[in-house]
Length: 599
Image (cartoon, rainbow, N blue to C red; front, side, top):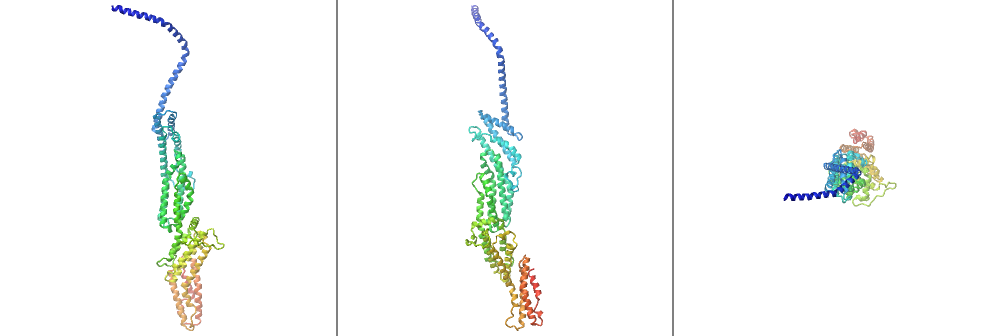
């Protein structure tokens, strides 16, 4: 039963398959016909499509390999001899972000590339800063581009790096770029490092001059005088020139050109600190001993004033700074310098009134100090005149200002205020010297002291000045000094030789007395011995050989003829049986003795 049932079912399926075959056979036949027709037409196109597909697959694989290589290159960092390849790779990755492929990996890669390239920039700058420092003073007055700050080879290496980093997106230019903020912070940090390194190198260049100048100021009695002031001005000029050269390099090598001002201000900060330290020390030294450092201060005041325009341009305008250290320093110096003029006159006055020990007969310290003071005037004449005008004509007299002396007719007034000051100095000094001479216990020694000092002033200021100071001594002051010399010389003759001339004058009322000439001769030779003794330790006109010879001639003309007349007068009257007993020296011998006073 089962067998017959299965047979029936299978027969039924067989019948259905035959029916299906009959139905499909026409369709199959038609399909084969169409296939044969179209086969020839589509074969070529299909082949091409297959080739394109295979090529696309190969391109995708190749791009994936290139991307991996660029990623590895960026992560590794640039190499010294192949920076260009690194820059190209970074720019390609950045371009993918610019065209919309803003995946997290690409953003991180651009940020990393910017950091790696910035680190290479910093490394190259550091190598340039390892170079030996220069002496910027040696390059004055060369233009800034002639000051060798960064080696040209280093600049050549840095320029393509700077160009590449400047082209990266920043918030100001690409606000939607996902890496812009990070890149900006990276470049800002690198530029700050540049300023710190270059500022340190520039400071190293200036430190040797800084130490040398302060050494002079602290060790020399006058702080180095005008020469030291000029050296400080030259050092400051070199500081400005070096800063300007660094600013020009910064313009070329800054990664963020919009922040050049702030960066330059950071760069020069250590240089300003060095200059401030120097000027503070100098001002302290001047204030502690104004009279000995006066010309140092005056010279520095004038020198700093001449530097102000360059300082304003480089150290303030280009750095975007409002602070004006140079003007502050000069303002402080101005007050000190103005105070120095009345204080110097007061010092001269006090020399004539203060209680002192025995003066001696040589040139007084105040005379030497005054000559030294006035001899400095021509070197800084313009500055001195400027300061005296600020003070006011005559105000150096400690409250007696406004009493300007009118120049004589024909007297130059081009330098009137300076001439008035020098005239007051000379007048005050001669008055003090007269007071000092009167303190001597022996008038003869006092007269020698006065003659030596007035003669010294006349020689050093009028006859043989070491500087052109005589050009600023008015005619009235010259007349005063010459008059004082003549008066001092007359006082010298009177104090020292009147005792010789008095015995040789009229013999008195008792003209018949034979002992009178004897007494007078005895008095004469005693006085001569006293004068000789005085001149053995009181040298007249110390180093002025011509002056001593002139004085000797004057004394000989004054004494010897009087002695000759006296001896001749009484020799004929036989006032003694033994005249040689009283005439201890002939007029010729007296003349020789007098001339020995001045050898």
